[in-house]
Length: 613
Image 1: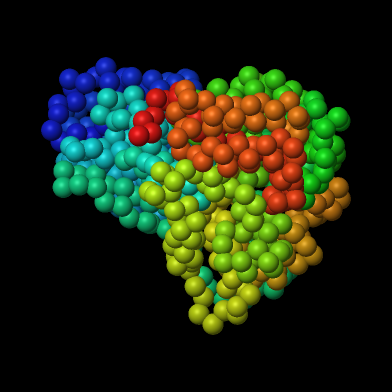
Image 2: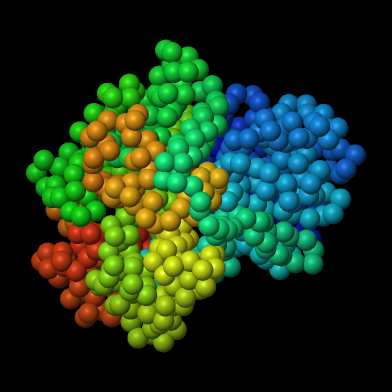
């Protein structure tokens, strides 16, 4: 919905650095094409770019709010879905609201209840609040980490922004790769919450507050999952899941702008779209929902079914759209389309990306933006309800490692001795796994199977979910589209977290979700096998990856060649080119896709002039 930036400095007079603040703010232009605001004082400066999704009520940010309790300056991104409840509580305390804008609500809530106000908020958001009297900054992020917020602590304060580019625009920050973070560059699903590969740059972890005062920086988690016994029957559980989804989808439709939804024809996106369609019809019988999916021009010639992608979305999406009554669009992308927009996807991230997976989503969101401003999507259902194949494979569940990685080759296996003398990828992976396992909320007396499945869900919610949400958020905001994720409602996540695995999986993959939603979905959706987000299967794209990877590893002009064992890496590339890895990769993954992180790292390093030595 928007982007924010800021600079806190207890030594410099920031009034003298107005040009830098504006430069930082302008990096958020694509996230917020409609409005711009900057607020500067001696020790604090905030900037904001806005996207209009609900008319003038959003107001201009940053907002300076002065009451008898104090003075704050507020900038935020995202949406608050219980704003009416929050406004009622604020007014019942004696405060008068002038506009009811989200920034005003957040400012009053902070002055009334301190930083604990965030526990009262339901939404997908990030915010920066400068407490003028206390000379203190509070940064916060929603519970599941839907909306991003990065920060960099310097010697005299902190820089922060919705995307790294906002921080990179300040001369205090130098883009330098932390070599010990190479494992998360080559496999981003290993990153721990808040971790980035740039030295000194951190992301505010989900459900966390970061406070900056002259005495220094502190972090505090304000929400975490709690394990408790589940006493509802299967029927009661399915009914409550449905009630929660109906409520959260309804909350996220509270806007007067054209609405859309991603629709693959799978259980996740179709459930969200169907609930949205029903809610819109209750509001106005003639109100429409625009739905969208993506397919590839090369599918008829090259598509092959795999475990992760057993079929093509487009026919299922069209059938689902006809059933629920939405106006549906299928975008057909060529390989050249993907290659053409990859530079834009890199700019959207500022960190190494996902190549074609980013590109197809970017193209889809670009098309959606022509018909709507706000859209819903089904992401996070797999992590919440257990939709991936590994949830049903005992060898992976009992393996004592991240189950989605499998046992095939990894790019980190081919690092040079110079790199492995600094970081041991296998030990690094084990340490990350052990840290997350140690953080799993335990239920005393829980049987071994459910305790282990609880660990599997926690791992998925901690790593892969962040990758999925990051991609969705960056690609959508780069085209000015506000995409909302109902399955990330914390009330739903809290409830389903404690549902036993036998209930979640009754009837097969995501059986609980299907039981909750089956009466408003077409049979083709309910009976469809899990199919992951589509990717292009085209030798032309594969050859592009192989060619670029070969250059990176072998050319003396390459900034990354020294990081890899040249002979062994060439052997891997040759095996990929010869289609010899198919059986070694999880879920029938495309072998050439293994090279995406290498190619994207090189482009990131060169584009952003990241120091690697």
